Amino acid sequence: MSDLYCGAEVTGEPVENEEPGAAETAGMPELTDVPGESGMPQNVSQNTGWKATSEEMRREERQRKRLAIVEADFGFIGMLCLAFGLIGTFFLYKNPSGITFPLFVVMVYGFSWMILRRRGIHMKRGSWFLIGVSLLIGISTCMTADTTIHGLNKLALFLLLCVFVLHQRYRDGQWNIGKYMTAIVLFLCRALGFLGCPFRHGTRFLKSIHNRKYKNVVWVLAGICAAVPVVIILSILLATADRVFESVLSKGISEFLNPFTVIPIVFQIFFGIISMYCLICSAWAGEITEEVKDKRNAEPLIAVAFMAFIGAIYLLFCGIQVVYLFMGRGQLPDGLTYAEYARQGFFQLLFVAVLNLVMVLMCLKYFRRSAVLNGVLLVISLCTYVMVASAFYRMVLYVQQYHLTYLRLLVLWFLPMLAVLMAGVVALIFRNRFPLFWHCLAVISVFYLALAWMKPDYQIARYNLAAAGEGAVITDVYQSDYYSRDGVDYLTRLSADAAPAVAELMGESDGKQRLLEKYVFDYEKNCGWGVEIRRYNVSFAKALEILDQSRR
Image (tube, rainbow, N blue to C red; front, side, top):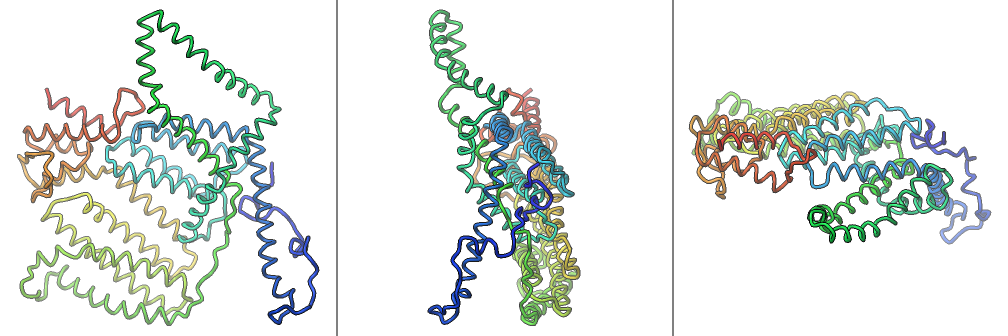
């Protein structure tokens, strides 16, 4: 087994055991004590620059060694990338939400496990959690017709994969949120820097094949390429001899060999192969500093004064919330009713609550520990909880008056998650080594899974129709003004996830029929639909079944 995959090297530590200063002095002129133009000896003024240069040289040397290890295993890694490109294209081409999407997630982590196992690397604690969350997100994709959830799922899966790779590659136990974000950016940028590796490694691999198994694969591919022109000529001759064969051949060519179909498929296969190989190179050959520097060197009195002044304003504001909003007491300004007072300001409070979270984290990161500062930050955190409760209560009242929309549902989902995230920040105030990143990752994962699986469009439709009462009908499914008082017209903005609620709670009318037809049409336009099993989507199939039943 190569040294790259031994314990020290997997964590990013150097493989070489060099003597201190050896690299600095190798190949460099001897320093003298002759003063330079700056008035100090040259060995002092140039030492820093030479050390930086030598460190870069050692880093480049380690990267070359690691790339050589990846290249030496090109037969295995290259075939894995080829399979990833081919199978991934079959799973995802014009199929963003079909039943093959979770299979794609399984394939990604299955291939990752194969690479780790080949190198003798065991799964770390926490990796199985990332895999489990990814699988649940993948399954939720084929269970919903909501294109917003589809896009968020893809983003979440990509970020979880990056965290999985970095977690396996480095000792990340003490990494904070900022360190992980920086590491993800570096990991992806270095993958772009390795774009030439699959071509260089592949070319040298083909020139130096000695393994009989890989030679056979090359000969088979060469035979297939040579047979292509012969097959074309024979197909033309046979088509002129039989009209039925000509019809079948024409249909197949128009459907599968159309340039507008072939070119995107080839590009997607090529992109899958290259991207996976570059990410592998970035994971093994890239180097990210594991150390998290302690930046808490600023004077805490600055933060105490700054946050205490803000905290005083917050205490006054929170007292007003308790008296006027929660208890319903106190004298409101002239011309302002209690209903108007309660149903405004939730987005401002949401912004302030998020800002408080950021300010507390910045104080904990850049200012020295102080009991007084900790107390002030605790007060700010507790005031944030009051603001979150106030914003949540105001939003509930607003929804009761003006019905539920997608944005309002996201706010009601985000506020409880923010409260739980803030609990981790409070723990960090008193426990310096609290794993805030993994706390946030777990909380966001659980809340996001709840959002993806509850089908927001279904919940919106069900709430608005129940609030509208029996006999709720819709007149024009294509009208531009969909923010009606009862929220029924807003249903035209939803996806096929809302079809079961519409079928159950909406009164029979032509508008209901047209609304179901619109759900089906919108999904077919955005995601595609066909008889092939790979495009099967549970939510859309349910909407199609409801539409068929309504037509009988």
